[in-house]
Image (cartoon, rainbow, N blue to C red; front, side, top):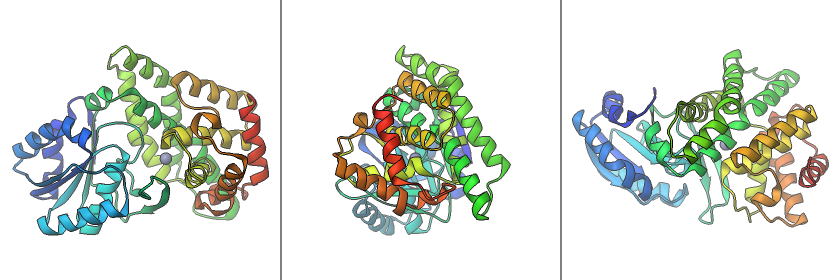
Length: 347
Ligand SMILES: [Zn+2]
């Protein structure tokens, strides 16, 4: 179930009532300071008890997950509610899975499309990418209060747009890869949602950013939130990630990345579309859009890799990362490096 709207947090209790009577609420400190009171009010009104609140999630690591699972075993919740950004929500999904109960997502910002997905991304204690794990279930309820998200720092919405920007392109390469390799073809619906995500970003993305800069919560903001949290999630889960995410994983594995997931993926998208020899005007218009909304367009904006580290990152992306299998042909590391150099020099 996906519930989105202004003030939607008041609908949380009603939305999760069928999952049981005891909730374990997991989040980061900032997110819970914003949302905990309203979450408690809504759950209380539906007769749901908050069995425990863990507000110490900083990152999705196995140490945090295991600590919270231990706590969960003591309190025996009927479901787990993750509150916050991708790291808190991914942690909550992993904890719920290990406890054998449903997960619920209450996103308080829009930096990634983690809320609805069945995947969680685990990092090391130093925030290096460790692995992503696909769970047997998606969160049972995804609740998106657009007032809360619109009030969060603008950078999160921009990062979320960066993560969603790639959906169409990775979906298309995945579909082509499946067609050539004889794998499972994505549905027309998934491809349509990937296209809808891209169209919504191009139509509303800049308006949403400008509105939030003026302190206004306009319909464009809600359109972008829906593109990130709903259409891109359903699209990417039913198609596949490809070179853009593979490059993200390679760059974060080699360390020294100072940007966030959506920013790195936006840059990876630029590399992927250029690598695929799409029309230069299309590549340039994506670069221009990224610049206007405030997404990075150069490697130097996201990390300071020396050549050796960059080569390692690209080789990992092309040869080791499983997302590379969603490219029609095995990506050629030398060509990717050439494309990266060309983008650095001004495409
Ligand atoms: Zn992503």
